[in-house]
Image 1 (cartoon, helix red, strand yellow):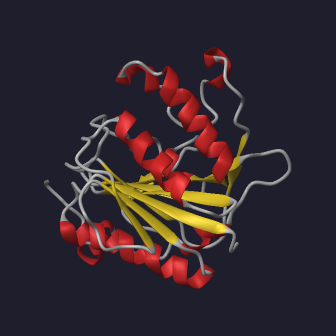
Image 2: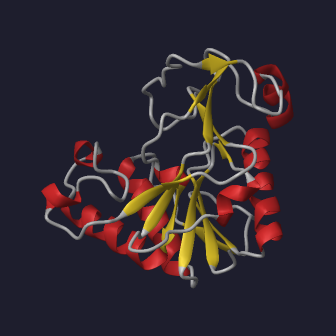
Length: 230
């Protein structure tokens, strides 16, 4: 899919080597699919085709919204892919898009690497902002409508992602579907010191020490410069 812009957003809190690993993966995918990157950061960052430095606005649900909104406003394509700074994206993640009446899709070909336990678990499904690809205008409208109504950080909980909480808020529905692109999974890096969410992710009933390509957690810690113990 070429009518897509990658919106990369970061609060610049990650260790430099790990952050560079994620950006390199995104940049490689952008070259494969011939799509632009808009980088929205809180400190100046030389990454992507266009850069927005939004300033030191802190780490919060509200600041994430503000950065995504700024990126969507800058993008000119019909679709956007929302990319967080601590997710290692597969190339195929950027080749999914909504069909029919759907306005977005959430990638489900995902594994979670829990750094505190050094295990990998299957993503159980659901909706995570960092896994959303959808219509730029629909995502922008959804986030702006919610941001105008949320008075506190607690208001975001359970309603953070597009497709959650619209009915109870009295705003337009956001229709989202699951998608499972082929190939290696996207990997969410969880339970490290720079995670915005301090809630520890659980391993669940199925977990392992390696990815489908047989890369072990220890291999990934070394290759991706993951922040163990931070």
